[in-house]
Image 1 (tube, rainbow, N blue to C red):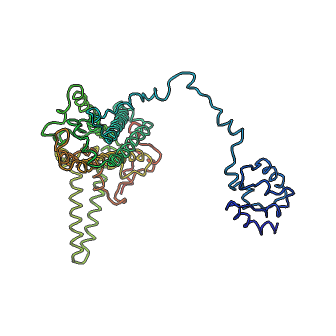
Image 2: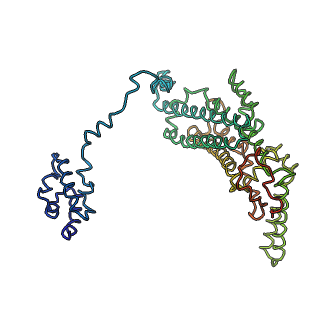
Image 3: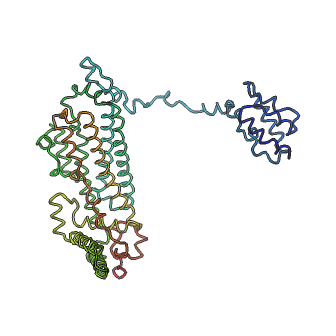
Amino acid sequence: MARWLKVNDSCRKQTEAGQRAPECSEVIGCDEPLKACIALKTKSVDFQRLEEVFAALLPTWTDMSGCPYFEKRHLLFKNKPPADEDEDASQAGVNKASKGGIIYGDYLQLDKIITAQVLQSEVKGNKIHDEHLFIVTHQAYELWFKQILFELDSVREIFVSGHVRDERNMLKVNTRIHRIVMIFRLLVDQFAVLETMTALDFFDFREYLTPASGFQSLQFRLLENKIGVPDNLRVPYNRRHYRDNFKGQQSEMLLSAEQEPTLLKLVEAWLERTPGLEVDGFNFWEKLRINIYEGLSKERQKTEKMADGEEKEDRKAEQAKQREIFTSLFDEKHHDHLVSKGERRFSYKALQGALMIYFYREEPRFQVPFQLLTSLMDIDTLMTKWRYNHVCMVHRMIGSKAGTGGSSGYQYLRSTVSDRYKVFVDLFNLATFLVPRHWVPKLNPNVHTFLYTAECCDSSYCSSEESD
């Protein structure tokens, strides 16, 4: 054994380098030299005999750690052809397609999809290579828009039918909203593929696109409507209502989508049912108001005791701004005024529910609602990023030229990258009203064992005695 340990390292180094290691046969004491089996420079290795030798010697070896032959880490074992039984196992399947039925191409209707790229430059007798990329990329966008609409409609249906009152359906809602988020992430990144085309490459075939324009994407306008982009906040397109650019059935579809309950309004109604908002129950809003004003008063008293100076004046000014912010928060008329101006979207009670979920997001009954609100913000963020990436790409490709559809191009698109097109802007603004945790009213311990289901839970699970 001592001799084995002595040459083991040498054996390892030589075998890993692809060299013969005759020492092994001498040290192991094998009557049949292993070097006869391990013909490193030939392809006539007797693997079966090699394994038989190892198997015969195994009982006599007490420490073979590190031996590349024993552990089958040697190059020979890596290049070993599969045994007959392995090959048979890999071919043990059944070719079901040979028995009839729908096959891959038919199921996906690939004959329609992969033949849908008609290059206008080629039709006009001047085929431009990059037009193919332009078409495929935009077709991919439209397919993903279709999937987003499919998921969005299913979520809206759950809300409309009242199934959202059952907590078990909230996982389904969250899953589908999260799927929309992931698709939008993909769509944002997809611009990188289109940007492999230079401005000159695009210029070569741009003349063949007129008057086609991305603004004419029916699915994207439906998406905006169904999520809840306010019609009165839309930027006019060439001084006209956006729907005037669509005719016939498309215009009717857009009008119908405007009249349906939007995701924004459905989430708003859901937030208004947040347990704990009841005035005759836990009355979260009133307790929060009392706690915040008490906290602000204590902070002001501490500031008054400070020595006169610039720091004291700065703190007083900051506290005055905080008081002004919270005064506006607890003023329902001020809230309604901001809604009329388009600066807020939710109703006053829905805003209360959203803030309650934020403050108690770590409680079991509020974790799923908090995840939903977070995903809704992700959708808004990604749609803004998508618009911004689109603006940058258009600016890069056509500069300040007019769009192919007749718009001002870059100037128009840039005007859409603003809070006017944010649907859940109120959720972003909630961070303005966050306060120290000890200012938040305490909940009854029973709340830890109940889920967020307005129909099953009442505000008795929220303690009025234990609030700060």
